[in-house]
Image 1: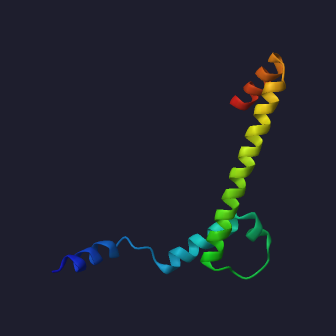
Image 2: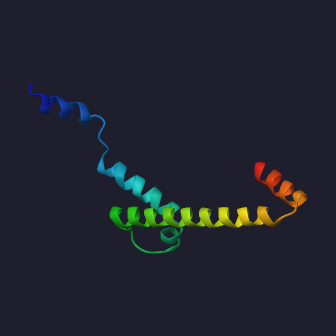
Image 3: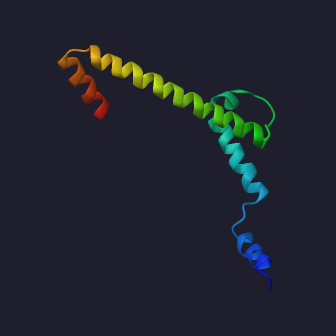
Length: 91
């Protein structure tokens, strides 16, 4: 048996089916605020993945902005306030 056929048989058992992909894309679509709130037909997997990437980028920007604001707050806070903020963050 050729190595190509052997690889094909080995990977065949671990391949994901179209139904599994559709189920995962549907679950992902439900997690996205923009797509979950829309009452429209199902979107293509490509569109869902693009929206997911956009959403993750926006979350990264939001985390960066909040981190910067927190750093500024801690720099400008007195010792007691800074200690309180740090203890709240540790909870």
